[in-house]
Image 1 (tube, helix red, strand yellow):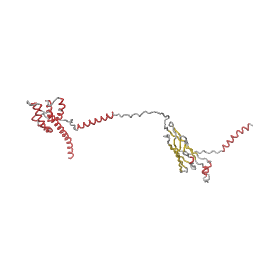
Image 2 (image 1 turned 90 degrees about the horizontal axis):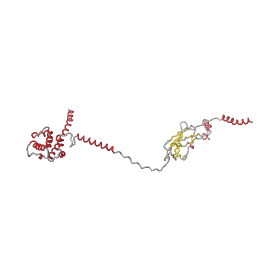
Image 3 (image 1 turned 30 degrees about the horizontal axis):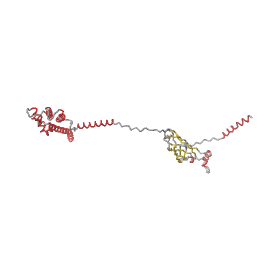
Image 4 (image 1 turned 135 degrees about the vertical axis):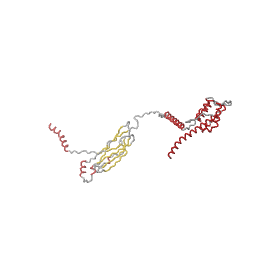
Length: 353
């Protein structure tokens, strides 16, 4: 009895081993590799996602267009807005399938995170359906049909992840923002100081240039003796000395010294003409200078009761001194121009020779 029970228990194991040995193992058929192109960042609520998928099918396999998903909602946050398929033949007799998907996001997240588009299952048309009712002469095709047993080839487009950004902060609070701060004031002190400094330096350079060109009437570059005399006898200095309408003896000697410097020698009544010979620019004032010189000489050296400083008019004397100083400056300027032009004329004459 015990032997029968043991045999009955071992019989299923024996039969399973026999049938397993009789079964012929068939190799598993894998689908083609799918290439997916898609931008994976920069998305938020309402954005469109363009995804392109393509793969190649071997010769003898026909893609099933009915396996392509239809437009419409995919889940509660993703819609398939558009899908387009293109099939092209390869040189080896196979085919290239290109599918363009357009997805739209209808959900958002609290924090940026990675979301995945679900995987898509595609397939080919079973070979038995291709040859059904047709006469085939290719033995290879018959062999494939027999081995496939009418099963379609599965093609999987893997799930594609992308980064989704939030559109609102995690918590919305009713905050009152402070008013915008006024713009910072431009620092005006430094540019203003710099501008004033540059302006001052420019004016100083201009004054120096005019002085070098001897164009300042009240500040000649090389004052002559009459010009120096006019500076010494300015009305301001005379007022400081409390002089009314009469020259002092010191003032008269100052005028005589200035005339002597202009003549280049000491002057006496008998050689006064040398003054106008050595300084031709004083010839226009010869009557006034002669009258002043004779009157002042009588005051200094002649014992004449009628000879008095009051006989010499202060305004008239200051006027001819100022006119003589201006004539002196013009004469000196013309002389300087002649000196500058003389080397140039000499050089031109030498070049001509």
